[in-house]
Amino acid sequence: MTAGPGKTILLTALYVALNGGCAARGPIAAPAVLPDDGGRQAAFARAGRTIGNLFPAQYRSTQRAIVTAGGKQFACDGLLSVSPAEGHHLAIVSSFGVVTDLRVKADGACELLKVTPLFREDWSRRYVARDLRRLFIAPPNLRPAGRLANDSIVLETAPDSDGVTAQYIFSADGVRWLALDLIRNGTAHYRATPKNFRKFPGTSAEIPGGFEVSAEAYRLDLRITELAAPGTEAQP
Image 1 (tube, rainbow, N blue to C red):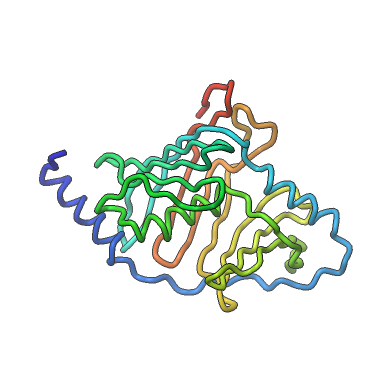
Image 2: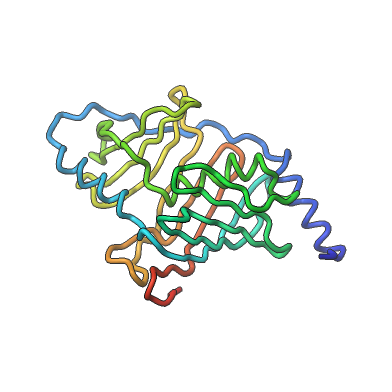
């Protein structure tokens, strides 16, 4: 593809922002988790079911995302295909074409299918795959962590190999997923907030219609424009 002068300037700006021009964001204030008094076991169990069954086991969706990095904003589309056999396959498309294409397989491994100068391999593995895992894939082995001062309840993962713990925050009854913090050494460096819950074709319960993410190198405002499970038609 040959880029004209206008596209060349945008291409350069996007490359700089995503590949070295990203100033680190400051720490995110994570809410204090209070010890559980033992009376919320049913709510914890319900929260585990909520996150585990949030998205259908198989579906296709189209997403619209605004990425803010290096003080600049860029729009792109995501095409996500999910199945138990193939895992989560995401292609990100901009006005320059497909800028990255990857799959998080059923065993959790990340497979890069296309790497471009705009989304280098390290960015795709570190950030794109992380967003895909954290926003659309339920983590195994969540455990009760406690509650917040407003009685929201918190489930968490065990620390991973990098010392990162994921804390999933739910409404007091465990029915609604409210937020996700990634915490290392007591400091949150990533926060995702699901928003615009609604029913899509093939879904029996309301699921997020989008997410807002604040991370160390970027911000992401993602909207699910279409989603459909097998045997249904996608609906915006």
